[in-house]
Image 1 (cartoon, rainbow, N blue to C red):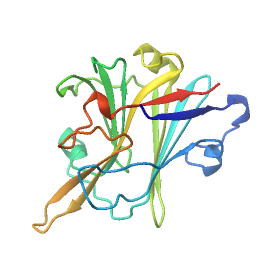
Image 2 (image 1 turned 90 degrees about the horizontal axis):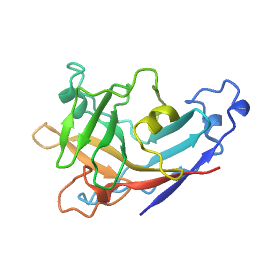
Image 3 (image 1 turned 30 degrees about the vertical axis):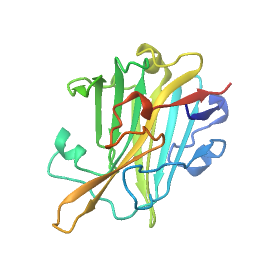
Image 4 (image 1 turned 135 degrees about the vertical axis):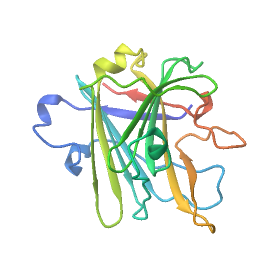
Length: 212
C-alpha cells in the first residue's frame, strides 16, 4: 500500500501563518504521483501536501489548471458532483464500513457524506461543524484548496490507527467534449486497478503516516 509521511509541526512554532501561505507548508512532503489509469491523456500536475499538530490535520491541494469548470446553478449534490473538485476519503477499516468522503470544489463548496460498501451514500450526514475549515485561492496557473480537520473528529470516527490514517486522494477534472457536454476525467493517487473508474473501493486507498 502506498504511504505518505505527514510531518508533525509544533503548534507553538506556527505563529499566525494562514493555511494558504506557502511558508506554512515548507516542512511538508510534496506528493505528486497522481494518474488517471482509465485515460490516455497526460494528467495535469497536482501537488498535495499535509501536516499535523496536536489539534489538527492540515491538507493542501495545488492543481495546475486554469481551465476549471464549476456548475454554479445551485449548491446541490448534483451541482458539486458536476464540477472540478479535489477529494479526500478516510476509512475506518478495509471493509469500507464505513468511510467518510470530502469532495471540495475550487470555491470550497463541500460535499461531505458517510458511505458504506457498494456506493451506499448518506448525503444527509455532515462532518461536525467547527471541526473542518476550508480556504481556496487561484493564480495565473493553478488553483489551491487547503483545509484543516480536527484530530478530535478523526479520532471520533475511529480513523487514526497506530498513527496512520488510511486515505484516498483524488481529483475530478471536467472537460468539454465534441458535443459540448462536460465529462469527467478521474484522477487518483493510488491506482485501484479497476476496469472502470472507481474510487469507492478498498484498493484506491493509501496510508498517511503521522510522523512524530
